[in-house]
Amino acid sequence: MTAVRQPDSPENAMVEPSLFPNRPPPPTPRRETPAAHAAAMGMQERLNELGSRIAVLEERAANLRKNGRLTEQSLISYDQETRAGLKALNERLTELARKVEEVHEKIDAISAELSGVAKRHEITVLERYLDLWQPLSFVTRDEAKLLLQDALAKRK
Image 1 (cartoon, rainbow, N blue to C red):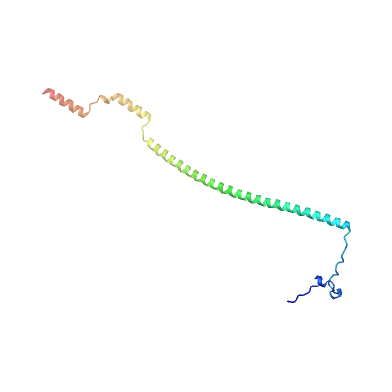
Image 2: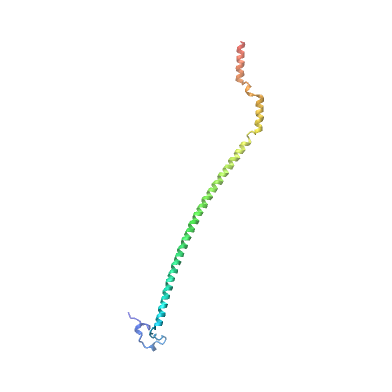
């Protein structure tokens, strides 16, 4: 395998610049001044601080997503419980409506039965007739036969 040499590779750093006209000239090494070093350190501290703030914000966002999922699950569970409760309540109401209908039917049957029963004033009229006739003093046929047989037996 033959390696292709790249113009940017370190081994080509000493190549004649006129051979690569589109290539920018290599950067000249700079010596950092103490002020530039302090500025770079300040920048590094700020970057570290921003990184830690981003980490805190990412953790908060993850917690919010987690709380959102928990809230969603709670709402789904609450919805399912509510639907089950409403279904049970609906069934119970249907059963109660059926029982009320049965009670109405029974009341109608009792009312129809009571329409054939004698009224209070009719009973009082019957009482007056019974008091007037005094049916307890009547003789039954069997009693009349016995009385006739006794009377006939006494005559003989």
